[in-house]
Length: 402
Image (cartoon, rainbow, N blue to C red; front, side):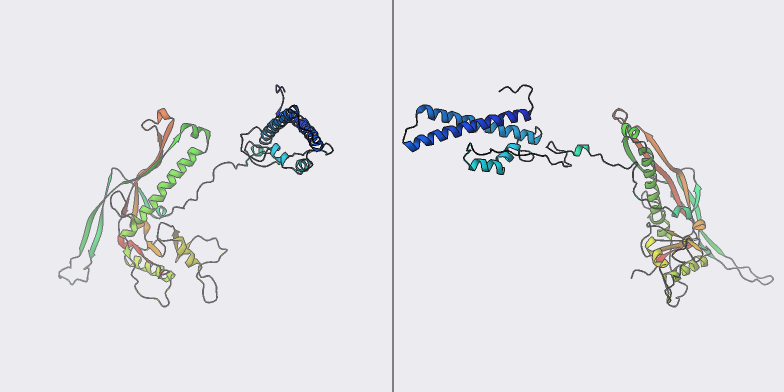
Protein backbone atom coordinates (compact mmCIF):
# COMPACT_ATOMS: atom_id res chain seq x y z
CA UNK A 1 0.00 0.00 0.00
CA UNK A 2 1.50 3.36 -1.05
CA UNK A 3 1.48 6.10 1.59
CA UNK A 4 2.77 8.89 -0.63
CA UNK A 5 0.77 12.15 -0.45
CA UNK A 6 -1.89 10.55 1.74
CA UNK A 7 -3.13 12.07 4.96
CA UNK A 8 -3.30 10.13 8.21
CA UNK A 9 -7.09 10.07 7.90
CA UNK A 10 -6.94 8.54 4.41
CA UNK A 11 -4.43 5.94 5.55
CA UNK A 12 -6.63 5.08 8.51
CA UNK A 13 -9.63 4.59 6.21
CA UNK A 14 -7.65 2.31 3.87
CA UNK A 15 -6.21 0.24 6.70
CA UNK A 16 -9.65 -0.05 8.27
CA UNK A 17 -11.02 -1.42 4.99
CA UNK A 18 -8.13 -3.88 4.65
CA UNK A 19 -8.55 -4.86 8.28
CA UNK A 20 -12.20 -5.67 7.63
CA UNK A 21 -11.21 -7.83 4.64
CA UNK A 22 -8.67 -9.65 6.81
CA UNK A 23 -11.31 -10.25 9.49
CA UNK A 24 -13.66 -11.61 6.84
CA UNK A 25 -10.90 -13.93 5.55
CA UNK A 26 -10.22 -15.27 9.02
CA UNK A 27 -13.93 -15.82 9.56
CA UNK A 28 -14.21 -17.74 6.27
CA UNK A 29 -11.26 -19.98 7.12
CA UNK A 30 -12.63 -20.52 10.63
CA UNK A 31 -16.04 -21.52 9.27
CA UNK A 32 -14.38 -23.95 6.79
CA UNK A 33 -12.30 -25.47 9.59
CA UNK A 34 -15.34 -25.86 11.82
CA UNK A 35 -17.26 -27.57 9.02
CA UNK A 36 -14.51 -30.07 8.41
CA UNK A 37 -14.11 -30.71 12.13
CA UNK A 38 -17.80 -31.59 12.40
CA UNK A 39 -17.52 -34.19 9.57
CA UNK A 40 -14.36 -35.64 11.05
CA UNK A 41 -12.07 -34.47 8.26
CA UNK A 42 -8.50 -33.65 9.04
CA UNK A 43 -7.37 -30.10 8.37
CA UNK A 44 -4.95 -29.94 5.49
CA UNK A 45 -1.57 -28.30 5.81
CA UNK A 46 -2.62 -25.78 3.19
CA UNK A 47 -5.65 -24.72 5.24
CA UNK A 48 -3.57 -24.31 8.37
CA UNK A 49 -1.05 -22.17 6.49
CA UNK A 50 -3.86 -20.02 5.09
CA UNK A 51 -5.29 -19.55 8.61
CA UNK A 52 -1.89 -18.57 10.03
CA UNK A 53 -1.27 -16.15 7.17
CA UNK A 54 -4.72 -14.56 7.57
CA UNK A 55 -4.32 -14.15 11.35
CA UNK A 56 -0.86 -12.58 10.99
CA UNK A 57 -2.18 -10.13 8.39
CA UNK A 58 -5.22 -9.25 10.53
CA UNK A 59 -3.09 -8.63 13.63
CA UNK A 60 -0.63 -6.48 11.68
CA UNK A 61 -3.41 -4.36 10.24
CA UNK A 62 -4.93 -4.02 13.71
CA UNK A 63 -1.66 -2.59 15.03
CA UNK A 64 -1.29 -0.20 12.09
CA UNK A 65 -4.88 0.95 12.46
CA UNK A 66 -4.48 1.59 16.20
CA UNK A 67 -1.19 3.47 15.68
CA UNK A 68 -2.53 5.80 12.99
CA UNK A 69 -5.74 6.48 14.86
CA UNK A 70 -3.75 7.35 18.00
CA UNK A 71 -1.78 9.92 16.02
CA UNK A 72 -4.99 11.34 14.63
CA UNK A 73 -6.44 11.68 18.10
CA UNK A 74 -3.32 13.47 19.36
CA UNK A 75 -2.79 15.65 16.36
CA UNK A 76 0.49 13.90 15.61
CA UNK A 77 1.72 13.94 19.24
CA UNK A 78 3.99 11.50 20.98
CA UNK A 79 2.96 8.10 22.17
CA UNK A 80 1.40 7.96 25.62
CA UNK A 81 0.29 11.60 25.70
CA UNK A 82 -3.22 13.03 25.78
CA UNK A 83 -6.52 11.17 25.59
CA UNK A 84 -7.17 7.67 24.15
CA UNK A 85 -6.53 7.20 20.45
CA UNK A 86 -9.30 6.59 17.96
CA UNK A 87 -8.12 2.97 17.63
CA UNK A 88 -8.35 2.43 21.38
CA UNK A 89 -11.74 4.05 21.52
CA UNK A 90 -12.88 1.97 18.51
CA UNK A 91 -11.97 -1.41 20.00
CA UNK A 92 -13.59 -0.38 23.31
CA UNK A 93 -16.79 0.84 21.67
CA UNK A 94 -20.10 -1.00 22.09
CA UNK A 95 -20.40 -1.55 18.34
CA UNK A 96 -17.06 -3.34 18.05
CA UNK A 97 -17.71 -5.42 21.19
CA UNK A 98 -21.09 -6.49 19.76
CA UNK A 99 -19.42 -7.39 16.48
CA UNK A 100 -16.76 -9.31 18.39
CA UNK A 101 -19.38 -11.19 20.43
CA UNK A 102 -20.99 -12.34 17.18
CA UNK A 103 -17.71 -14.09 16.29
CA UNK A 104 -17.42 -11.63 13.39
CA UNK A 105 -20.38 -13.32 11.64
CA UNK A 106 -21.03 -12.26 8.07
CA UNK A 107 -24.63 -11.54 8.97
CA UNK A 108 -23.55 -8.97 11.54
CA UNK A 109 -23.64 -5.26 10.63
CA UNK A 110 -20.00 -4.75 11.47
CA UNK A 111 -18.83 -1.94 13.77
CA UNK A 112 -18.49 1.80 13.40
CA UNK A 113 -17.90 4.79 15.69
CA UNK A 114 -18.58 8.48 15.29
CA UNK A 115 -15.79 10.72 16.55
CA UNK A 116 -16.09 14.36 17.55
CA UNK A 117 -13.30 16.33 19.28
CA UNK A 118 -14.21 18.32 22.43
CA UNK A 119 -12.96 21.91 22.18
CA UNK A 120 -11.11 23.05 25.31
CA UNK A 121 -8.94 25.99 26.39
CA UNK A 122 -5.84 23.78 26.55
CA UNK A 123 -2.75 24.93 24.67
CA UNK A 124 -1.19 21.48 24.42
CA UNK A 125 -0.78 19.61 21.12
CA UNK A 126 -4.02 17.61 21.45
CA UNK A 127 -7.30 17.32 19.56
CA UNK A 128 -9.73 20.12 20.42
CA UNK A 129 -7.10 22.36 22.08
CA UNK A 130 -7.94 25.93 21.04
CA UNK A 131 -6.40 27.86 23.96
CA UNK A 132 -3.80 29.52 21.75
CA UNK A 133 -6.59 31.44 20.01
CA UNK A 134 -7.79 33.04 23.25
CA UNK A 135 -6.55 36.62 23.60
CA UNK A 136 -5.64 37.91 27.08
CA UNK A 137 -7.12 41.24 28.19
CA UNK A 138 -4.33 43.47 29.52
CA UNK A 139 -4.97 46.83 31.10
CA UNK A 140 -2.61 49.63 30.03
CA UNK A 141 0.06 50.97 32.36
CA UNK A 142 1.30 49.63 35.71
CA UNK A 143 -0.55 49.61 39.02
CA UNK A 144 1.88 51.06 41.60
CA UNK A 145 2.16 50.11 45.24
CA UNK A 146 0.51 52.44 47.78
CA UNK A 147 2.64 55.27 49.11
CA UNK A 148 2.65 56.94 52.49
CA UNK A 149 1.93 60.68 52.52
CA UNK A 150 5.00 62.41 53.97
CA UNK A 151 4.23 65.33 56.28
CA UNK A 152 6.80 65.79 59.07
CA UNK A 153 9.25 67.80 56.90
CA UNK A 154 6.44 70.27 56.15
CA UNK A 155 6.24 71.14 59.86
CA UNK A 156 9.93 72.00 60.19
CA UNK A 157 11.66 75.18 59.06
CA UNK A 158 13.69 74.50 55.90
CA UNK A 159 17.23 75.69 55.30
CA UNK A 160 20.35 75.27 53.14
CA UNK A 161 23.89 74.59 54.29
CA UNK A 162 27.43 74.77 52.88
CA UNK A 163 30.10 72.20 53.57
CA UNK A 164 29.72 68.98 55.50
CA UNK A 165 29.42 70.17 59.10
CA UNK A 166 26.71 72.20 60.79
CA UNK A 167 27.37 74.06 64.03
CA UNK A 168 24.96 76.05 66.14
CA UNK A 169 24.93 77.49 69.63
CA UNK A 170 22.16 76.28 71.90
CA UNK A 171 21.06 77.82 75.17
CA UNK A 172 21.10 75.11 77.80
CA UNK A 173 20.42 77.13 80.96
CA UNK A 174 19.32 80.56 82.22
CA UNK A 175 19.24 81.85 85.76
CA UNK A 176 17.07 84.96 86.01
CA UNK A 177 17.95 87.05 89.05
CA UNK A 178 16.35 90.25 87.80
CA UNK A 179 14.77 92.17 90.68
CA UNK A 180 13.94 95.53 92.16
CA UNK A 181 17.00 97.61 93.12
CA UNK A 182 17.09 100.49 95.61
CA UNK A 183 18.93 103.68 94.84
CA UNK A 184 22.63 103.05 95.33
CA UNK A 185 21.96 99.35 95.86
CA UNK A 186 23.86 96.42 94.32
CA UNK A 187 22.27 95.08 91.19
CA UNK A 188 21.81 91.27 90.97
CA UNK A 189 23.62 89.13 88.41
CA UNK A 190 21.94 86.55 86.14
CA UNK A 191 23.57 83.60 84.39
CA UNK A 192 23.13 82.03 80.98
CA UNK A 193 24.65 78.78 79.74
CA UNK A 194 25.37 78.08 76.08
CA UNK A 195 26.54 74.94 74.36
CA UNK A 196 28.08 74.45 70.90
CA UNK A 197 26.36 71.65 68.99
CA UNK A 198 27.99 70.12 65.94
CA UNK A 199 26.29 67.79 63.50
CA UNK A 200 27.01 66.73 59.95
CA UNK A 201 25.08 66.18 56.77
CA UNK A 202 24.02 62.57 56.24
CA UNK A 203 23.42 60.86 52.92
CA UNK A 204 20.32 58.82 52.13
CA UNK A 205 20.68 56.89 48.88
CA UNK A 206 19.71 53.80 46.86
CA UNK A 207 19.84 52.71 43.20
CA UNK A 208 18.48 50.34 40.57
CA UNK A 209 19.83 48.86 37.35
CA UNK A 210 17.82 48.59 34.15
CA UNK A 211 18.68 47.55 30.61
CA UNK A 212 18.58 50.11 27.82
CA UNK A 213 16.21 47.83 25.94
CA UNK A 214 13.58 47.70 28.68
CA UNK A 215 13.80 51.46 29.27
CA UNK A 216 13.16 52.01 25.55
CA UNK A 217 10.43 49.36 25.28
CA UNK A 218 8.43 50.36 28.37
CA UNK A 219 7.84 54.08 28.05
CA UNK A 220 6.72 54.73 31.60
CA UNK A 221 9.35 52.58 33.33
CA UNK A 222 11.95 55.34 33.69
CA UNK A 223 9.49 57.75 35.29
CA UNK A 224 8.21 54.94 37.53
CA UNK A 225 11.76 54.11 38.69
CA UNK A 226 12.52 57.79 39.34
CA UNK A 227 9.36 58.29 41.33
CA UNK A 228 9.83 55.10 43.34
CA UNK A 229 13.44 55.95 44.18
CA UNK A 230 12.48 59.45 45.35
CA UNK A 231 9.68 58.00 47.45
CA UNK A 232 12.17 55.66 49.08
CA UNK A 233 14.32 58.62 50.12
CA UNK A 234 11.34 60.48 51.60
CA UNK A 235 10.22 57.35 53.47
CA UNK A 236 13.58 56.94 55.22
CA UNK A 237 13.91 60.70 55.75
CA UNK A 238 10.66 60.87 57.71
CA UNK A 239 11.76 58.00 59.92
CA UNK A 240 15.10 59.74 60.54
CA UNK A 241 13.64 63.16 61.28
CA UNK A 242 11.48 61.65 63.99
CA UNK A 243 13.41 58.65 65.31
CA UNK A 244 17.07 58.85 64.19
CA UNK A 245 19.35 57.92 67.13
CA UNK A 246 22.33 60.02 66.04
CA UNK A 247 24.74 57.07 65.83
CA UNK A 248 26.85 56.36 62.75
CA UNK A 249 25.18 57.78 59.67
CA UNK A 250 21.82 58.37 61.38
CA UNK A 251 20.36 61.81 61.98
CA UNK A 252 19.69 62.82 65.58
CA UNK A 253 15.90 62.90 65.38
CA UNK A 254 13.43 65.02 67.30
CA UNK A 255 11.88 62.26 69.45
CA UNK A 256 15.18 61.10 71.08
CA UNK A 257 15.86 64.75 72.04
CA UNK A 258 12.31 65.72 73.03
CA UNK A 259 11.23 66.47 76.60
CA UNK A 260 9.18 63.79 78.36
CA UNK A 261 5.52 64.63 78.89
CA UNK A 262 4.80 65.90 82.39
CA UNK A 263 1.32 67.26 83.10
CA UNK A 264 1.10 70.51 85.05
CA UNK A 265 -2.02 69.11 86.74
CA UNK A 266 -4.31 66.09 86.53
CA UNK A 267 -7.70 66.77 84.90
CA UNK A 268 -10.89 65.05 86.04
CA UNK A 269 -11.69 61.97 83.93
CA UNK A 270 -8.72 62.70 81.69
CA UNK A 271 -8.67 61.53 78.07
CA UNK A 272 -6.12 61.53 75.22
CA UNK A 273 -7.59 64.86 74.12
CA UNK A 274 -6.78 66.28 77.56
CA UNK A 275 -3.24 64.86 77.33
CA UNK A 276 -2.57 66.72 74.09
CA UNK A 277 -3.87 69.97 75.56
CA UNK A 278 -1.60 69.57 78.57
CA UNK A 279 1.35 68.88 76.25
CA UNK A 280 0.60 72.21 74.56
CA UNK A 281 0.66 73.84 77.98
CA UNK A 282 4.02 72.23 78.78
CA UNK A 283 5.53 73.63 75.56
CA UNK A 284 4.04 77.05 76.26
CA UNK A 285 5.54 77.09 79.75
CA UNK A 286 8.91 76.47 78.08
CA UNK A 287 8.26 79.67 76.08
CA UNK A 288 7.82 77.73 72.85
CA UNK A 289 4.08 77.60 72.04
CA UNK A 290 3.26 74.43 70.08
CA UNK A 291 2.44 74.58 66.37
CA UNK A 292 1.31 71.00 65.71
CA UNK A 293 0.74 67.42 66.86
CA UNK A 294 2.19 64.24 65.35
CA UNK A 295 0.55 60.86 65.98
CA UNK A 296 -0.12 57.49 64.40
CA UNK A 297 -3.25 57.27 62.16
CA UNK A 298 -4.67 54.63 64.52
CA UNK A 299 -4.62 57.04 67.45
CA UNK A 300 -6.13 59.89 65.47
CA UNK A 301 -8.95 57.55 64.44
CA UNK A 302 -9.55 56.75 68.12
CA UNK A 303 -9.76 60.45 68.93
CA UNK A 304 -12.09 61.21 66.03
CA UNK A 305 -14.40 58.39 67.14
CA UNK A 306 -14.67 59.70 70.70
CA UNK A 307 -18.34 60.37 71.62
CA UNK A 308 -20.06 62.18 74.45
CA UNK A 309 -22.69 60.68 76.72
CA UNK A 310 -25.37 61.37 74.11
CA UNK A 311 -23.53 59.45 71.40
CA UNK A 312 -22.45 62.56 69.47
CA UNK A 313 -18.93 62.82 68.05
CA UNK A 314 -16.78 65.29 69.96
CA UNK A 315 -14.32 66.00 67.12
CA UNK A 316 -16.28 67.18 64.08
CA UNK A 317 -18.91 65.17 62.22
CA UNK A 318 -18.50 62.16 59.88
CA UNK A 319 -19.54 64.12 56.78
CA UNK A 320 -17.24 67.03 57.54
CA UNK A 321 -14.31 67.95 55.29
CA UNK A 322 -12.16 70.01 57.67
CA UNK A 323 -8.53 68.85 57.88
CA UNK A 324 -7.30 67.09 61.04
CA UNK A 325 -6.98 69.70 63.80
CA UNK A 326 -7.03 69.56 67.58
CA UNK A 327 -7.08 72.53 69.97
CA UNK A 328 -6.54 74.81 66.97
CA UNK A 329 -3.35 73.02 65.82
CA UNK A 330 -2.86 70.79 62.75
CA UNK A 331 -2.59 67.05 63.37
CA UNK A 332 -0.03 65.17 61.28
CA UNK A 333 -0.79 61.46 60.87
CA UNK A 334 2.17 59.25 60.07
CA UNK A 335 3.10 55.62 60.65
CA UNK A 336 6.66 56.79 61.35
CA UNK A 337 5.57 57.30 64.98
CA UNK A 338 4.54 54.34 67.13
CA UNK A 339 0.94 53.63 68.11
CA UNK A 340 -0.14 55.28 71.40
CA UNK A 341 2.67 57.86 71.17
CA UNK A 342 2.44 61.59 70.40
CA UNK A 343 4.82 64.44 69.65
CA UNK A 344 3.58 67.98 70.29
CA UNK A 345 5.80 71.00 69.82
CA UNK A 346 6.90 74.24 68.25
CA UNK A 347 8.24 72.68 65.08
CA UNK A 348 9.04 75.90 63.24
CA UNK A 349 11.02 77.45 66.09
CA UNK A 350 12.39 74.35 67.78
CA UNK A 351 14.01 72.58 64.82
CA UNK A 352 15.31 73.13 61.32
CA UNK A 353 16.21 70.77 58.48
CA UNK A 354 19.16 71.75 56.26
CA UNK A 355 19.53 70.39 52.73
CA UNK A 356 23.08 69.99 51.46
CA UNK A 357 21.90 68.04 48.40
CA UNK A 358 18.30 68.25 47.39
CA UNK A 359 16.78 64.87 46.54
CA UNK A 360 17.91 64.07 43.01
CA UNK A 361 18.10 61.35 40.37
CA UNK A 362 21.25 60.55 38.38
CA UNK A 363 21.83 57.96 35.65
CA UNK A 364 25.21 56.70 34.50
CA UNK A 365 27.24 53.73 33.29
CA UNK A 366 28.92 51.94 36.21
CA UNK A 367 31.82 49.52 35.67
CA UNK A 368 30.88 47.31 32.67
CA UNK A 369 27.31 48.66 32.29
CA UNK A 370 28.16 50.14 28.89
CA UNK A 371 29.10 46.84 27.24
CA UNK A 372 26.12 45.12 28.87
CA UNK A 373 23.59 47.75 27.76
CA UNK A 374 22.74 48.51 31.39
CA UNK A 375 22.09 51.84 33.09
CA UNK A 376 22.49 52.50 36.81
CA UNK A 377 19.87 54.92 38.18
CA UNK A 378 20.76 56.51 41.54
CA UNK A 379 18.65 58.54 43.96
CA UNK A 380 20.21 60.38 46.87
CA UNK A 381 19.92 63.36 49.18
CA UNK A 382 22.13 64.86 51.87
CA UNK A 383 20.72 66.69 54.85
CA UNK A 384 21.26 67.67 58.47
CA UNK A 385 18.81 68.26 61.32
CA UNK A 386 19.21 70.83 64.07
CA UNK A 387 17.04 70.61 67.20
CA UNK A 388 17.56 74.00 68.84
CA UNK A 389 15.45 73.60 71.96
CA UNK A 390 14.46 70.15 73.30
CA UNK A 391 11.94 71.86 75.62
CA UNK A 392 10.00 72.89 72.52
CA UNK A 393 8.97 69.27 71.89
CA UNK A 394 6.87 67.15 74.22
CA UNK A 395 6.79 63.37 73.74
CA UNK A 396 4.70 60.85 75.61
CA UNK A 397 1.90 58.27 75.76
CA UNK A 398 -1.74 58.90 74.84
CA UNK A 399 -3.00 56.28 77.26
CA UNK A 400 -4.91 54.12 74.80
CA UNK A 401 -2.69 51.07 75.36
CA UNK A 402 -2.41 49.91 78.96
